[in-house]
Amino acid sequence: MKSRLFNIAWSIVGQFGSFSEALAHAWKIAKLQFALCTQALVNFSYRKVDGSIREAVGSLQNPPMPKGGMRKVNHSILTYFDLQQQDWRCAKVLNLIFS
Image (tube, rainbow, N blue to C red; front, side):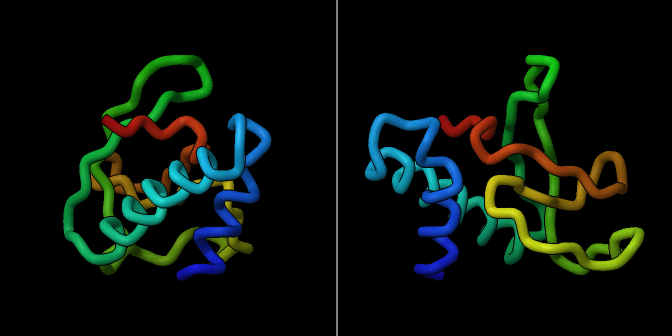
């Protein structure tokens, strides 16, 4: 858990004023990832590439296998199974909106 948290923080540190701010954001991301893995339904928001806000409903509990199999872990991307679209989606962790 600790190494994953620091991997996320180091991947986004350039977008923040200090490593402590990046680490605080990484904690929120880690909590969201944990919720996606342990809960059947998780609501969260993020800003899409075109600037619009996406209200997502996702989970990682018993999702279907992604097309092409499993991929390499990228700590700057949050991958989840969208329960509304019934397909895999991803978002940049910098674009996640936490209230």
